[in-house]
Image (cartoon, rainbow over all chains, first blue to last red; front, side, top):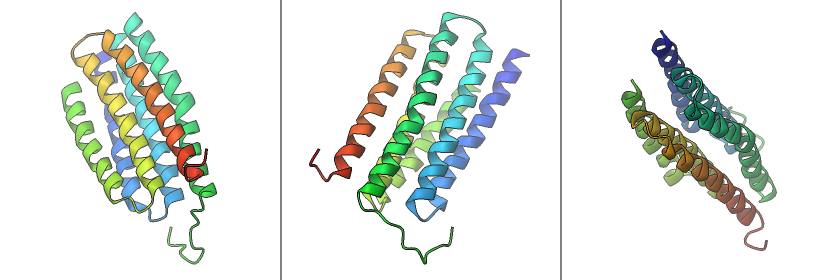
Length: 101
Length: 84
């Protein structure tokens, strides 16, 4: 039963990750691409770690995985923001008339 | 099941690496690097599940911290065109 639930969570995370990879190539301008890719990638990461934690129950193993989840949840948005900010302040502008997506 | 997930994710890492190669601007490459790094982090955790070894998770923790910090500094370096 526990294995089944964790497998479902892992399958959901796989769907999220493939959507994230698809999102990286679908969007033309940089800013929507960075939003979609890192946003969905973090979600996929969370679902997979939840699946693994459910599979291992309460133990030192899942405690370490929880630490990794906290690190990723805290730092990943900060890193993505810094990339977008460096793109904006580095002079990367999207030409306004290209509003395809 | 976990092995199949590891195969799929390593395949997706290669596809994300294509974004690093063809990325028009340097920031696309930085984004691709960030994505590849978080997917490799997932792979490390999956391998620690497959091999049932808990010390691999310490590698994952250190790898995630170092990877995030390196992306931060590269982004800051690129923003000022090298004049930090």
